[in-house]
Image (cartoon, rainbow, N blue to C red; front, side, top):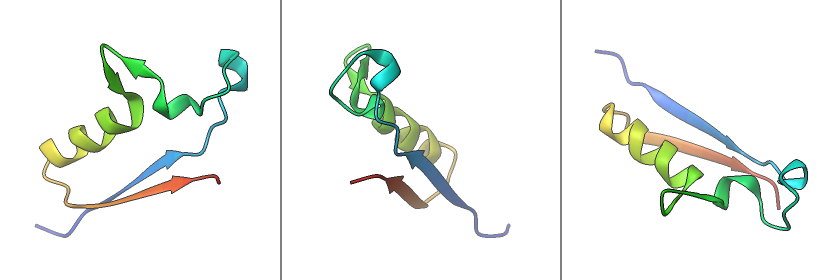
Length: 55
């Protein structure tokens, strides 16, 4: 099997959510959205994960 890499785009500001927080740090059922995406990628067997953020 070929090596697979995941790129997680996590650069949204969250302004349409009327929030001062970035949208990826909002929690769904007690866990941040970005954390859910990364955990799902790991469960799928992806070990190389790059997260793109805006500072």
